[in-house]
Structure formats: structure tokens, C-alpha cells
Image (cartoon, rainbow, N blue to C red):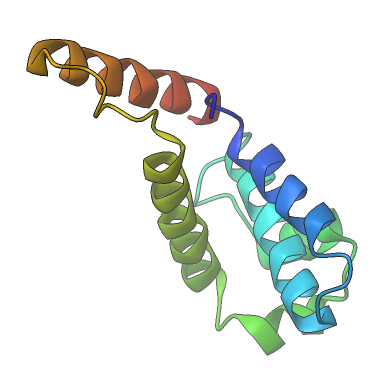
Length: 116
């Protein structure tokens, strides 16, 4: 899978969850909003108001899912790291270990370039 913007990746997951429970979709909407905002602003400037406004949800809804911005940012970062590991191309076919390391590093650099 090619390296993608993480917010777009999450939006694709949301589209696939149309028949899922509202709880799962709402949590994902909050995470998408957080990922989008973190691509434009710093953690220190990020607010719960911005997250809920971007997600199109009421401010109080946020606290049904997360204790604060630290908790949602941690969830987004953990999801991001898991996703980039999952998107990494298969390196088993490469016999040369240096070629495998080079391919993996190229993947990670491209993902970070698009998301940081």
C-alpha cells in the first residue's frame, strides 16, 4: 500500500464503517479531526473546541469518548504508528538485507513527509 495522509486513511476507514455502530463512527470522526488539525497546528495550540468543530460534533460529545486532548492525541499517534507499520511494503521478497532496509526507510520517510 502506498504512503498516504493519515487523516485521509482514517476517512477511508470511516467510509467503510457506514453500517458500524454510531459509537465507532463518532470516535473515528474525532480522530480524523484531530489528525487534520495536528497537520496544521501544534499540540499546544490544539483545543477540544477545534476538534469538535472540525468533526461537526457538540463539545460535550468529546468527553464521552476521551478524557482530554492528551488522550485523543495519544490515540491518533498510536493509530498512526500502527498504520504506517501495516502499510509498509512486504520486504520478504528482497534477498539483499540492505535493499530491504533501504525500501523500509524510503517508506517511512515518505509517510512522515506527508504527515508531519
